[in-house]
Image (cartoon, rainbow, N blue to C red; front, top):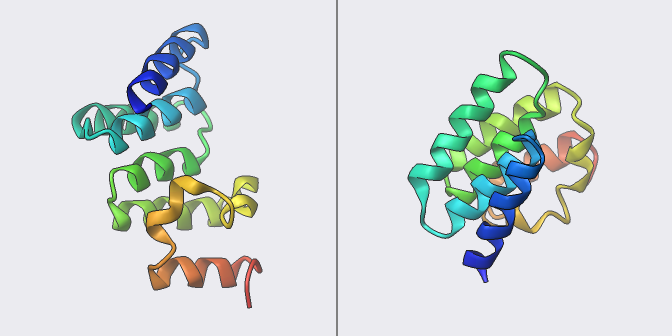
Length: 117
């Protein structure tokens, strides 16, 4: 039901006035549906917006993970840890990051922030 989800995320993004979290959810949905160009466009918009105001870097990570760009996803994840973004406590449960879990870098981040031993 990704197509339906995209429709709803597009509506929500418009209604929210382009809130960063809605941009991330829409970008992730685009990414996992194969609409990489649109996902990358939203990622670039989030990066640009982050130069004007605070945007949690986990939002960029969400799109990068959806694109299966692991290097970029870990770049943003490490930045989120450095920024002390509170969302990192949900890493163990976030299904949008399932494709990162087998990467040794994920285990290392989890260990670094104390979510695993």
